[in-house]
Length: 118
Length: 118
Image (cartoon, rainbow over all chains, first blue to last red; front, top):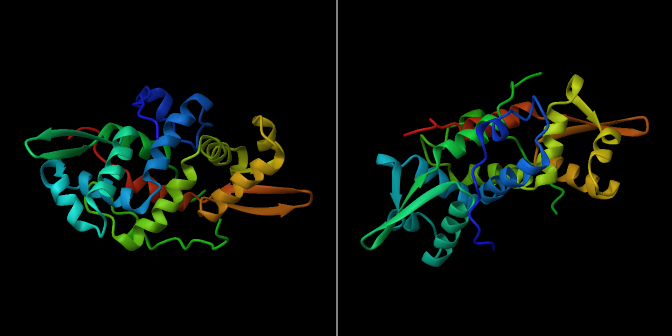
């Protein structure tokens, strides 16, 4: 697992809906990394719990009990989300708190935004 | 790789934005499978080429030359997209044609649709 932090692309590269133009190769790797991080049921649930948390942030102490998984496993999934640029975190006292990277989610949403029917 | 066709979930399950409520476990597996399929640069490019194709469909004969990859590799990626419910295909004569599953893409877009700033 790479520890490299992904750079959020410029809006004009990342946000053109894929139904209007082909995704350039250089943008595809960055965007695919975010989709890959969302491509796990536990990570998708974690992402939604963080994004929908009261006050816009969630403590790892509140996230872990929602799953039948160990703390280290949850921490690993949160690290994958963070490395994919989907969440940001900071430690306050004993616990780490997570916030959604809303511009990043909005860019991914815009990319997939198509008319429901042709 | 499972050959099972994924069932598209009911809109009220799949489309509640993750910033408003946590994704239920039973929906997370299905949705994560689609994100996982998009979590590869080549598949993301293929998806965009199909979704943005003139007339709404793309021939595999037009998709393959755009990549420095073999025909079987491209066919494998297209199969992954199809099994994840993201594209539909039919064979006409020699070639297979692909169309985006627009309701599925729209549902994924709605899921990630958040206000860009808190």
